[in-house]
Image (cartoon, rainbow, N blue to C red; front, side, top):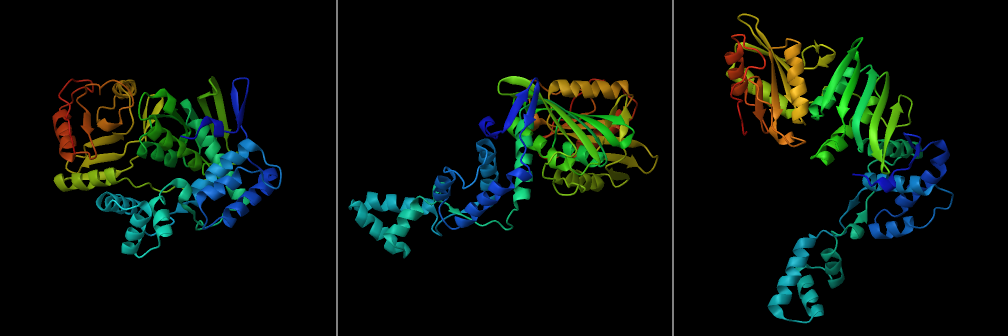
Length: 400
């Protein structure tokens, strides 16, 4: 997680204001890019020492720190030697223990066996330390404008990482955003507006969870670059910044680097389930991403529709990622109140984000790593008699 000290922002009232980079920052960003290019092939510690010195032109310290953070991750590094450092250390230590020679003699003996000089061997022993790695040239050099946008995205993601609740109102590509949220397992509810392409997403923030906050925060932050492809969006998040409860607001037009154009995200978990279910139930059709279903004031986006060809009976499957017991209880109560009795929740046991267990329900299938199609089929066969959603029963428990 990005340290709070790296986030250039200020608080006005109860609102946090990100200090985004703009065209006025391009001159010093260009100089920063030139410094990185000048140190390609040299040790990272040398570049770090240079960056602790001022640039030839004025640059805001807070913005410069976050831009350096982004560039270091983008630019990358490589090991300074072809000899694996662990192997070099192991050979030196073993030889020192065996021969009892002076350090210089030990180094010379091991270096000779590796066909390198003692100096090269010494470099290899420490080559995996971050500061000893060599600065590597990126595949594509950034422009000052692109670096500014990438830095702004990192700032926004760092603030969003400290959220407890997030509300996103969007239009256009709404299904792609919801699809991403589901595939990343985010705790999310969708309130419909006018059609599937206009919706409001209500998401839990990482700071609302008791565990798995780092993984969840990364998954949540991946939504931001996708929003740039919506016709418009407004995001509001309740955040904990600088010891205060504040509001973060982002919207269309904010200078944030966009992600790749939305596509049909692939999920190995879903693909495996579809393949396995078709194999064990050849008389059923498996429909991926069926139409959204309205349950009172919420939209539900099932992952699959399973339809039996003989009588047209149809069941919906939703795969749940990150969860808390309260979240599942609300979802089950909503399905019951809306009369959605032909929907099965497949819940990943490993993504529990709080204390508490899965509520008991006859239409829940627990899994780890894979969804067992036989367990789903058993639920369908058992529940086809018309039992109510809240009917208690044994929950299939699968360890895949």
